[in-house]
Image (cartoon, rainbow, N blue to C red; front, side, top):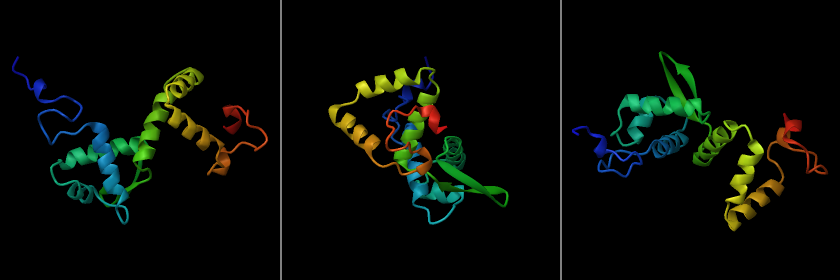
Length: 153
């Protein structure tokens, strides 16, 4: 076979050092955008990424991030300027939420996820769940810890 499929491993660790996995590239773009002083154009992001990515590649990544809710865009003339609304942890959480939303049996998925956690991660999750919620619209009454998720919707 004389195709170039052997040149890429798909995980960003293949022979081409300039190739990155999509998740790593999205995280890098998001990190650069997070450091922007104001909404910025694609060229600003491309320049700070080191210049090895094509302009169209940067637009594609920004558009994917926009679809995931990690960035916002607003019209500026004939193009857009971009703003990060999530950090790398937020992007990971969005990915996790997308997987959870795609499953019919949310309880089974969550139960399986929790049972696979390390002891430290399980303890951390319990601490986070016990902590005071940051968003008042998501909080359940303090005396009712067994409220169903549907009550918050």
